[in-house]
Image 1 (tube, one colour):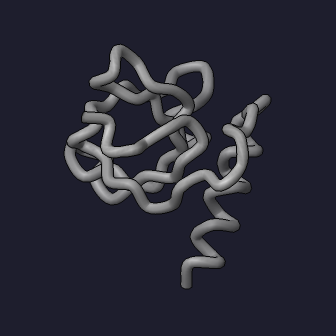
Image 2: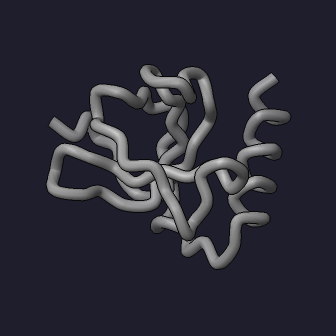
Length: 86
């Protein structure tokens, strides 16, 4: 059911008003949901709860899940990922 999505993975929102937005998975909730953040509109203090079927895996986290201490780290990580993807 989880489609192999774990904390630290980069996903893109596939449904909702934030469709197409790159997000970082913070944690799994109840085996059906993930908490995601982008550091801008969805912060560490207020992550978005999305169902697995509403996000698509873009990049697996190859190391242990990073510990995000602030939103700037998430924004910087996603910005670097976006630049390397082109």
